[in-house]
Length: 126
Image (cartoon, rainbow, N blue to C red; front, side, top):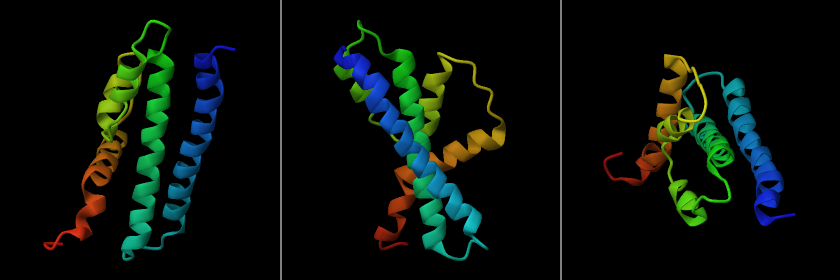
């Protein structure tokens, strides 16, 4: 088996399981929340879902974009981002994806949270 076949079939399969666990844990936390008063619960929901969806988008991009002629290092470097909307736009160049406004806004919220809001309490102005 070629290393690329092993990577796509097994390593990314493990990654799907990992991303699914993040999404599940985030949604489970959301389901258990009674209100939005506890920042630790809100943080856990946003953190887990943002990581899970980001990883899932990256898996899809790899499966669409990787082939034997692609520059592997360039592809891997291009995945070092936390912008869910950029990843979605990239994926849309390969597949028809029809998300509604609330779904797109949710991905935007996850991107904003992961990029900056998760560190918000580490600043004096918080």
